[in-house]
Image (tube, rainbow, N blue to C red; front, side, top):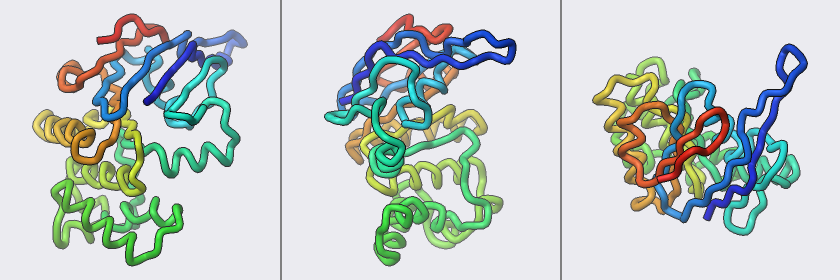
Length: 225
């Protein structure tokens, strides 16, 4: 279960003032939820996702994932949290250009210390699960379509069996048909993998596909459905 309590994140602005990116946000999510965080550009949704993923530290408040208080962990503990508890999917795919699709999926497992034969076997299995088979797995990102690259990114995010998948505008660089297939795939993960999926989006079609929806305005949670 994810529990967020009085979560706030502020930044110093260029003029010396303070910008409140996330403002006293509270919510909870049960395991296996498919949730969206919805808002316009600048609403704080990507900052909230970064806080949930341990990429940013909050200025105040608390994030708990099961019995782990993520918001107060040490740098070393946060590295472990990002490596084993969460998986990330980004709008721009963020694949390593000189590695094949299979090698991109294997990389997080290498950082986690998994033996090579196990890494390769799991990468093949995950890529097949997202619809990439045969020689496609051996292609570098430049030889894959946008939809194929995002499928690789999802497989990579699943590589270390994370409890939570955090996806930041995962359909933003895709056409509507491909984007719909990616949303469908993300929505299947809670049942097929037992994973909680949280998607940041400004797209109403994406948000409508999720089971739980949080609306942000100016860093504040204004509605939860």
